Amino acid sequence: MRKLLAALLLSLVAGPALAQLSIEITGAGGNRIPIAIAPFAGEAALPPGVTGVLRADLERSGLFRAIEVPPLVPQPSESSSVNYAEWKSRLADALVLGSIAVRSDGRFEVRFRLYDVVKQTAVGGVAYTVSREQLRATAHRIADYVYEKLTGEKGVFSTKIAYVVKRGARYELQLADADGANEQAMLVSNEPIISPAWSPNGKRIAYVSFQNKKAIVYVQDVEVPKQNVVANFKGSNSAPAWAPDGSRLAVALSRDGNSQLYLVNADGSNLRRLTNSSGIDTEPSFSPDGQSIYFTSDRGGSPQIYRMPAAGGDAQRVTFEGSYNVSPRVSPDGRSLAYIMRNGGKFQAALLDLNTRQVQVLTDSELDESPSFAPNGRQILLATVIGGRGVLSAVSSDGRVKQRLTLSAGDVREPAWGPLVQ
Amino acid sequence: MRFLCTSLAIFLLAACAGTQTPDSQPPAAVEDRGAGKPGASAQGVPSKPIASVDLTGRPGAAAGASALKDPNNILSKRSVFYDFDRFDVKDEYKPLIEAHAKYLRENGGTRMLIQGNTDERGSREYNLALGQRRSESVKRMLLLLGGREDQIEAVSLGEEKPRATGTGEEAFAQNRRSDMLYPGEY
Image 1 (tube, helix red, strand yellow):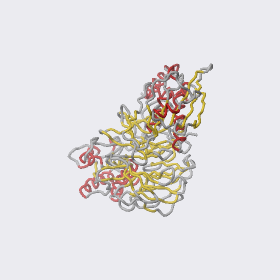
Image 2 (tube, helix red, strand yellow):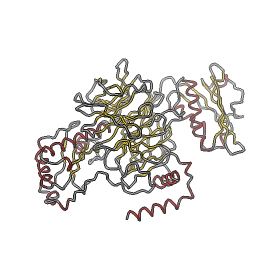
Image 3 (cartoon, helix red, strand yellow):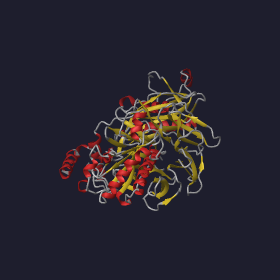
Image 4 (cartoon, helix red, strand yellow):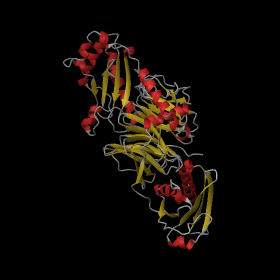
């Protein structure tokens, strides 16, 4: 019943036609793999266009270039014999063929096979039996398969992103597919919402809501419309960051004066203080091994990034260039740190190599905020401001591929990239 | 009025019950609950949130409350402004804070909420902490000047509720601010 109410409420508050993020690619990598994706046999009769989603996914990664495929008669499928010479003459290094068939129970059978045109071999393939609603998700799974086979890294096309939209005086915490489709409101409020953070298993989101006129940290299950208070003390309660095991969160609380870091269990119990400084400590972020916490502190006179043991203890300064370095996020492999630095009068995303100490500025934006790594570490999702309006942008961790995700109406901010789906 | 809204919302919910399937819409949405009880399960009924910050002093009951509204009285001024990334109260605002401290001393039953704000540049979370530091610095001065701990609450809105919405130093300067507010004013 609660689910029913919530779904109905969603339709009331959000309306039936949800505005969706559209993605524009504003840069591309150097060596993109040329791939031919032939329309799947039987696909023309279906609306969503599995190969269209697959092609868009791979191109968006910046690592693939989709090759124009002319109409083929008869339409090839994964069971056709492959004329490698023909695909080679079209300059394809890789080829995807497949088919979609309607089963007697109304579900769909989607099959595909991936070929290495250069080596003239089949790399592999998968068959899925899915409902109509799952066709788009199936396209993302095929993209993940192709991406992993050809690059050796996990694809993130089946992941989700969270972000906050401000429409007029209303704030919406939204979840969407990584390509911006299927936007769903998780929380709608007349007061600000900031700092969404995915639990490591992708089932819960921690966030800060001002619905009670001050910052309070909540955790909400993505499938259960119920807010659970994690931290609601005197002053501000904010900056939730999940420990990698999902049992605890680090938070910033001003209950004892200045903003300081604390650990708290995900159910709000067992609060303990982590830092004891005379300045502001905030924006904790766990290293992937759970051993360290990176955070922002102005204890040295200007906001800089520090690292300390996850159980508390002495902190070491991590950033030295510039007078304003904030919002640290450790890469999934633990080797680099994305953060926001003030560069002249601009606030730009930067990447620090934790071994070599080299800093690379990733964007030429005026006002970047809230960096968030894709779970494979390949891209960093950011909030930025263009023409006075908040948009999301994604930049590859080498700075070469840039995308902009724009919502037709409203300000978008506070993105958080969700974990890999099991 | 709340009851009317509630029943209207329930009616609307019921009216479209036949057209939606819940399973097609995960994850489900939560609307603000009006009860002001964090952790209570969602009612599914949209209504205005009620502040949990309970500052129930009655402004009309306080002696000299009209002074708060009199544009010729320093008490009608409520804002302290700051430089970028700073939270120290400049000397020019000390007479203002002294006047409000005196008002709090003379009206022991009234209360004050101090909201710290920042401009939009930099990190939202750092700005939330900075806004808190700004409001705390005003609170500390008021306490030193005779205000009572149980009269004054300091909170932060960070960069989330800008007074001036433009970009540029003029708007930014307007937004780097602490506001001293009395019951009924927030």
